[in-house]
Image (cartoon, rainbow, N blue to C red; front, top):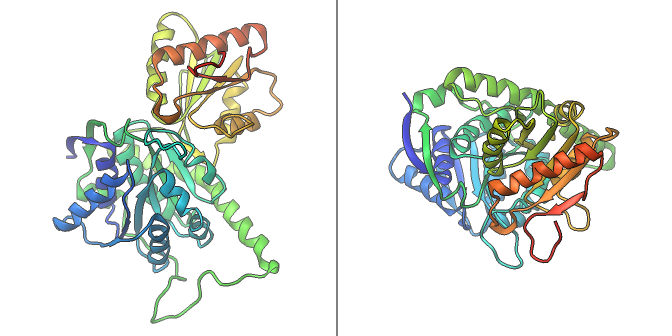
Length: 394
């Protein structure tokens, strides 16, 4: 039986990595991620985890170490946040370009300046095109479960790409919740030993990985990466089904839709705002209002077809963004607008929660009321609404 404990999201991530029997951890601290690598060091010290634990001098070095370790064919894990992720940027496309299934927990935190340590998604959104699979969690159980699932997804031979598991700073990373922690036997059953491809670094069978490539070959490399990313949705659904069968918990696949079948209006959320929105949907449904929710779990690859199918059946769609692409809109809104291209329905962007600002039930209800207004009139009052921002009209 699983062990049920009240733990933080950071502990849940570290515990799941330990249960996946990672063989290399590259560790560098940054608030609010630090406890993930600290917990892993405790597991190593206690004899619960047999791995090479490398204390490196920066996040750039952490990802460089992960690339080197993964290239030898062993399971590799690290974690970071905010400026640390930005410092890794140079190495992230190397990991994906070499098709290395590294798993990294990213505690989503505001990018400076000004300095802020609370939740925002502007750290991970710029890595949209780095070639990494990217997903978001909305509770600590999902953090634990998705770290386990991420190894099966990333290491699948159809994919062979690195993956991030996102958890909102402090709301998940430092807040405790009851979590069912996998026992070693059941984790081993779900995440079997990693079998790497034949072209790994091996001093007994020397080869070259990541050589200089002239223009004659680069298009094919990029096509193969794109093709692999397009296989991710099917692999995600397969892994989720296997997880549900073994553990009985279902967080959804690429998306987790709720009450969308007969909805008049739908809101798209990412991360912990999804849990709040879920409660508001229940309240408004009890009032007879046909509202629906799409919890967007995977940001890369973007589930275009699934999102469009839902959008085709409703009268208005809102997208909640905890990030902003300056001078344009929220990144999630931009992606959804692309998915819904050609549909004649109002689509609204709600930007909020930046820098850790609260996203309340009243905020979610406000978004739904604006969507109902747009559904009645056929036009959004505003394409982009900055939620609860002093001096800015809503």
